[in-house]
Amino acid sequence: MLVKSLRWLVPMAIIGASYGGYSAIAANAPQPEEKPSIQTEPTVEVENIFPTNHQVMITSYGELTPLEQTQLSAQVSGEVTNWHPNFVPGGVVKRGEVLFSLEKDNYEAEVLQAEANLASAQATLIEEQAKAKVAERQAKKLSDKQVTDLYLRKPQVLSAKASVKSAQAALKRARRDLENCQVIAPYDALVVSRDIGVGQFVSAGAQVAILNNIEAAEIRIPIAGFDSAFLPEQLAGIDASIIQSGITNVTRQGHIARDLGIVDSKTRMVNLVVRINDPYSVDSDLPSLKFGSYVQVQFAGKALKHIYRLPQELVNNRTVWVVNQHNQLEPKTVNVLREEGEFFLIGGGLNKQDQVVLTVPEYPQKGMTVKIAHTEADPSLTVK
Image (cartoon, rainbow, N blue to C red; front, side, top):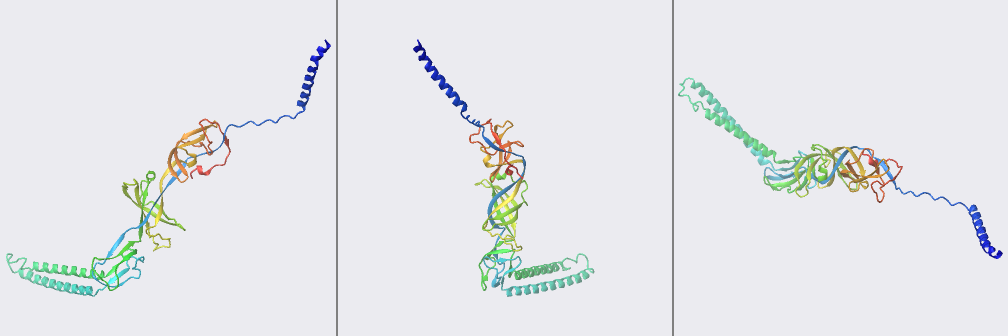
């Protein structure tokens, strides 16, 4: 019986001793560190936005062309006696300068002949007027039936007056031909070509040179459809900046001269004409622009009110993510009015002081709870 009892007591004692030892060890063992709770909400950066007014700037490109080009001709015939030193291709001449001269002896003789003819006609007129006065005095002694216009020499006087006018016209033409022996520059001009030389005989009406007007130049610029909506109603006279890019950029000021009034059938664009005065800087110290230069033109379009200006990376498929008052993501569909560089101009869909998400989570969902990180204001979100 004793042996049977010991068979149960020994295992129980061993188990008790083992439990006591484990409890002692567990009591003296270091406590495990508490693991921090895992945050499941993504952290995003936000920025409050405010509407403001914005001046649209329209940019286009075009080629600088002369305001006008003249195919110069001589109005009289003659031999070339001399020409201006700048009357060469690439030369610049001023308005009123003599480009070349023709031999004028024959035309001076024609002026003298015309003056003589005029003097003769005037003498004949004086003689006929004197005879008419004598006839008028004698007619007082005659009956009315005997006195006729022919008796009073009225036809002779009229004929003499006509001869005087004809002689005056001939003298005027002769003097004009004499003046035209010197061909004058019609405006400040760039000489494109010259086809005459000293001793060459020039026929009246023959082309002798080509001139480009440098008092003003024009640039025809196309306006794309997305820019047409932002053109001001009154275009003529609006200031425009003309920029030529290169090693050193050249900037000049001009103005919009006119709208060509048609839509190009191929490009579906409207075309404006910008004018710049004195492109070759003949009368100023400004940098010059040469004909044929490809330039950029910028001018002010419409002024937009209550516009939001956002970086393009924040707008995806016309959707902008904002954080609502419950710290939840909310997508907003916006009306993109215009793209300007790296920004979109938003005209609708956002409210004043909306918290726009600057760092959108990889997989944003409507209603997703997020944690807002404190950031400094982003000046790019407010148009100034």
